[in-house]
Structures are given as structure tokens and as C-alpha cells.
Amino acid sequence: MIFRRGANALKKESESLLQTALKIFKIILGSAIFAVGIQWFYYPATLLSGGVTGVSMMINYLTGLPIGVMMFAMNIPLFIIAFKSYGWRFVAGSLLGTFACSLFIDLLALVDFTITAEPFLAAIYGGIITGLGLGIVYTTGSTTGGTDILAKLIREKYPYVNFGTMILVLDAVIIVVYAVIFQKYDRAMYTVIAVYIAARVIDLVLYGSSQSKLCHIISEYSDEIQSEIVKELNRGVTVLQGKGAYSGADKQILLCVVKRQQIVEIKKIVKNIDKKAFVIVTDTRDVFGEGFGDISIDK
Image (tube, rainbow, N blue to C red; front, side, top):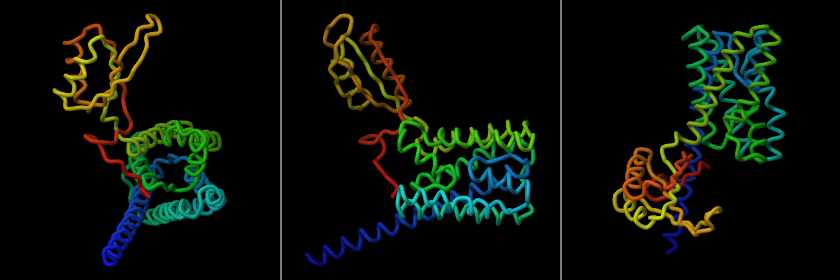
């Protein structure tokens, strides 16, 4: 019995160490990818990133000071705020992300290599790469500092706003300042494209690509429809009780989540049974449970 308890404790400790190692790896990997997008795409085309990184790039354009060093220095006050709100666990991961990003950006600056200086290509591919890097870091529950921390603080109050969308709004302020100070309005417009793409990629990494559909079906033949869905598609159906506001009649509302490619079959089933049925189909962000993904939370 004692041996079994000791083995379980050892297993839990090993799993915890593995999760921590994986989190550190993802933060470092995401930071390195983000740095590639900054130094080998944005910088040669004189585009701007958002947030503290963007401010650091503006300072670099004016003074020549290293971008990474300025990033880390300006993040210190924000980490003090983050520590008061989230504690050491959040600060540790985000501090690692900020340090890694700053380090990789300054190290890549020493490499005389440019993929493209064409602003449109830099905006598209730079946006994809920086968004991918930041998205990987965010999946760990950490950030790379800067406005990411502000976005996280704001999202605590407004959780229905997507993380990438919040960052996009904060970055817009930095871009406007850049356009006014440097009088590079064309580069500012390219930068808008870049940060928009980055924000969409961040949302894609964090929330997925809406691979499932949520169906609400209202029909006088709900029993037949739900039976066909279960038999033909092997999908569960939840029956909700409703009432028509106009008719006052009691109605059954069928709720069913299916894979995106199964929505055509759902329509066929409903059409064959009741052409007058009322069907609502919406995208889903995440679906967990039998037949879909397992619930997983990065620690």
C-alpha cells in the first residue's frame, strides 16, 4: 500500500515536471518564431510590430538602441502590475517569454540575413509568423509582456472579447503614433495588414478553426429527426423544451453538435422529414467530450 502511494506520488511529480518542461519549450519556441518575424520580415521593410515591441522598434529607428534591450527595460513596470494581479506563476512564464523574445531579436540582429524587404510580402508572411509565435506562447497561459499583459488585464473584465482582437485594438494606437512621428503612412498601412493577420493567426492557434457546427432544429417531427440523426450520424441529440411566442404552443428544440462535413447530412435528414422545419446552424469555438476533443488545460 505504501509502495503504491509512493509510486503514484512519483508519477504525479514526473507528469508535473514534464508539463513544466513542455511549457518552457513552447515559450522558447514561440519566442524564437516571433523574433524571426520581427527581424527578418518587419525590420527590413521598416514595418512596425504592436505594443512594447513596436515602441522599441521606433526607438531603434531614432537612436539605434537594441530593440531587445529596450523591450525588456520597458516591460519591468508592467511585470510589477502583473505580479500584483496574477502572482509569481504568471510572471515567471511571461518573464521567460519576454526575456527569450528580447534575446532572440537582438541575436538575430547580428545575423546579416534578409528574407524580403518588400513591404506587402513582409506584412503577410511576417504577420503569419509573428502571430504563430505569439499564439504558441499564449497557449501556455503566459505572454511576451508589453500590451499582452494589458490585454490580459482588460480581458479579465471583458472575457467575451477575443485575445487577438484586444491586442489588435491596443496595437492600433502604436501604429497611429508611428505614422505621425515618422510620416510613413504607407508603411503604417502595411503594418495594419501585418498586425491584423497576426491577430487572426493568434485566434486560430488559441481557439481553433471552427471545425464543428452547432445546430438548433425546431420541427413538429422532432422525434423522427432526432432518431435519424442518432442512427445515421451516430451523434447525440439534446432535447430542449420551448414555447412559441406567437402561437403559445409547446415545442421541442433539438440541439446537436456535428463535424463540419456532417452539416450536409443534417440538412438532408431534416429536409426529408420536415421541409418546414426551422434550422439554425452556427460555428463553434471549442467542443469537448465524446466524439470530439478531450478537455485539456495548459498549466
